[in-house]
Amino acid sequence: MTTTLYLHDHCLDHDPGPQHPESPGRYAAILQAVHNAAPSLPGLVLAEAPLGTREQVLLAHDEEHWRHIEAASPLSGHHSLDPDTHLSPGSREAALRGVGAACAAVDLLQECSHHHVFCLTRPPGHHATPERSMGFCVFNQIAIAALYAQRHCGVRRIAIVDFDVHHGNGTQDIALGRPDLLYLSTHQFPHYPGTGGRHENRAGNIHNIPLAVGTDDSTFRTLFKAEALPQLEAFAPDMLLVSAGFDAHGEDPLASLSFTDATYGWLGEQLAAVALRHCQGRLLSTLEGGYNLDALGRSVVAYVAGVQVGLS
Image (cartoon, rainbow, N blue to C red):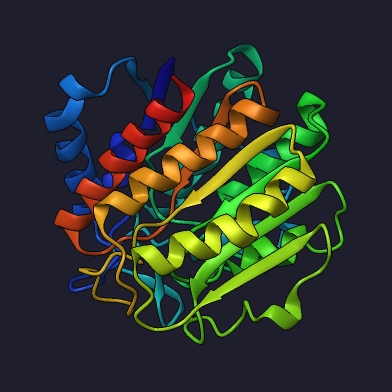
């Protein structure tokens, strides 16, 4: 069993400004944690994230959004796309590395079974809608990966599981009404961006599991086993994609849930088991949130280790 991590130094070049929680320090903290844990993570392979293309971005976004990001990318200083989302001179290329990594991960998984590919790129993507960036996100790489897999690789049924503490409104918008896509999200509710209530659920296509303030490991695992796993089993995906956000951790400053590192390991095992049953052990993860640097690094390592246990 192999875990391939897609990385690129350009992911350090996206700098949304001083004191912004989605800082280059997130990427550095993950790399250090993975380096420290490497002896206990067998089969770890590091790969350079390729640069994504306009054609890949347009799988999930409209032409106007592509042109807007091109025009708004500054040569110096910052340009604000919304009150939370800011571009620096290196942001566009960093975001395109995330797109390229996600599509390359799909290609790699088509060749290899019992394989986990984790795109450790930033900025995150799950809030980006077809027509705009928001919530720290520029391009929606997980949705792009799903549509790339369907249109270019012949993968029919794809499930996206999103365990970021914030609801992935952009991914839901892109998935809505596509019967061969399942978007399943666990998230604090109500919380930014205000979407993700149960009234938005659509049978076999959208399934939101809102979590109350203070939800801990035990409560979350009970809900996930009762709702998320049966949904995935019923859908029986041909490929499993994961928006892996680690900001539901009890140490994270941007939300009010109480997960520990151990639950991210548990999630990795559970999702790997689904991938084994339905997807020949093929699992793709992309990095979303997580803003306490120590907790983020530990949680990523726990998640990767959990996937390895589940796929072994």
